[in-house]
Amino acid sequence: MSSVIPDNYHASKDLLKDRVILVTGAGDGIGKAAAKIYAQHGASIVLSGRTSHKLEAVYDEIMAEGNPEPAIFPLDLSSATHEDILGLTGGISQEFGRLDGLLNNAAELGSLTPVDHYPIDLLQRVLTVNLQAPFILTQACLPLLRQSDDAAILFSSTEPYEKSGAYWGAYGISKQGLDAFMLILADELENNTPIRVNSIDPGPIRTRLRQLAYPAEDLSKLKLPEDVANSYLYMMGADSKAIRGKIVKANYN
Image (cartoon, rainbow, N blue to C red; front, side):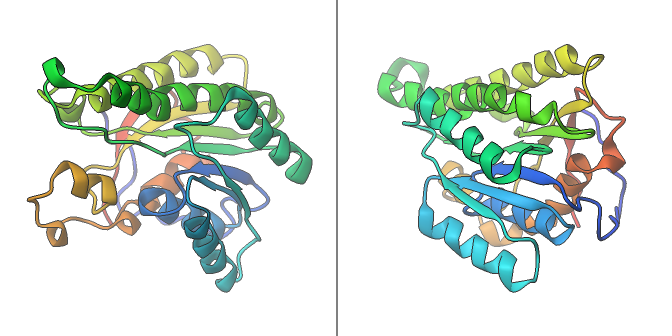
């Protein structure tokens, strides 16, 4: 894993001006922080997540700051069909006519359980949310992303031990698979499209998923999602256009 994000990165105010970016898991945590910083730098954000009232709250915050009006597309990835996902991309096409960026951020923890006892229904749910749905969504977004002169696909990865350590079960498997998908896609798109594909490891951040994974941890000692938002901005914007097929560590502000 490399660290290529400049320390104290400062983006121009119009870095993402006139760009359309889809963010999954945008209702809270890193997805919310990324959506807000993208909007602050000129992007029109498509807010997607499973909880409508959370997306509406993010919408209100973006509008209160005087940023471009976002769109809201509620979607529960654990139960979404292929047709539901095509409905999302069709809605983006109808409302905006194009797509310049995709942040696959939504994730499900599942359970920290030995393989012997891991519930199969939970396995299927976690793999669906964390791996299958991002694959299908990314595939559905590719025709729109190909219309952009400078498109970026970004995945939220996780710390290495959470992808191979004992008891991480479906979550670890899905995140390993997501890294593999990123690398495959980046290799396929490297020479014939302007679409760059990367993953970012945010590290230990104060999120709902982190609290579920580490219930005894003192969350007050962790960085906030806003502390890594600048790294997500760098990896989505044109300043990182030379970076392809990398899993990068976030810098903390």
